[in-house]
Length: 432
View 1 (cartoon, rainbow, N blue to C red):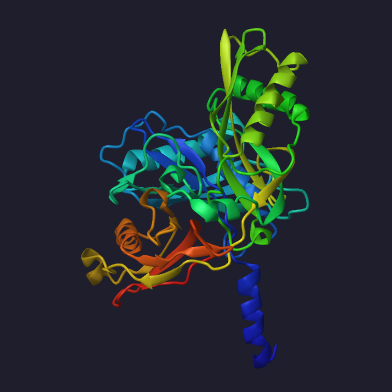
View 2 (view 1 turned 90 degrees about the vertical axis):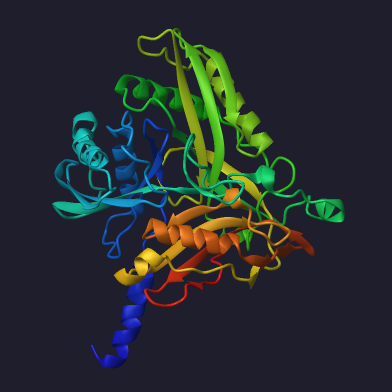
């Protein structure tokens, strides 16, 4: 290959083999610390599809053995551990090793024991059809997500797992006057596959199998509503509805059945944000019940199934597809722009180590150009100290707010801050 073709070839390979973004699974420790688990695509993707790695992370998370463990000291926000699994073609495990420690020996032991527990419970997913090779190595990332309190302090995640994206829409200043009426109608529609994901009964194989049968029984009864519009005003605006490839819905449906399999309770514990969708999901369970399609639970007077939801353009096989849904979108005229960067301080304890890296996070810029603290979510960070510094920089920044149809609107922004080992941190352009 001549020299003039080498550079284009390298650039093309870099585009083709970028890591894919995957959804995290959630595990909770005894002290309510919530850890995220995901299997990002490696730089050399090869023939393994992203959904297979997602399935590995899902299987591993379900078998997690450390749920009753309380860490000796609080796990630092932004902690990122890594475990490497060597998985064979038939779904067996050959080796599991800690690549990056959690900083807690007993928690590291739980990561290793979980890796082998999967074999006893169900085994790992077998290689997809058409994929060659005797085995492959899959890296799992275990992280402690960062959550920011109302007063701007960084705290560890406690209680329920954070909803991806916006978590505190109640704090967004409401649109008023003319803008409220101007923005009442969406700009367009994005068509996606709505998926249901079991969110409970982990660790009990019989109840997990029963919950799967309940979900399967409800699936044919789902009736897709017409265009789905958020309850009240739109919560977040995007650069273009055409670019929306995936939506994470905060909804949680709880179904309670008696010993005969008949419903005693069905409710939306957490709304999806779309009232028409909430009603359709409740009706789905009631229709299945009236048809006598729900099986009795195993050896229990009552049993509970909890189901969460997400939507995508068919890019994953995670969860059970319910059908096609049309989600209303609001397009931006202009993205938020930084007017004044907040204090950018490199952590003093890292200066002598030559440590740097990039911190990427998501947050909502309100109509006043200020960041809403509780909307912040760290996507990736190499060190907890860099996480704290990056969050402080973003909270101290001022933005030119985003606009849509001549009105200022709240916008979900993804932003990266680069920390060099000996230079002042730099803030990158917002990532749409």
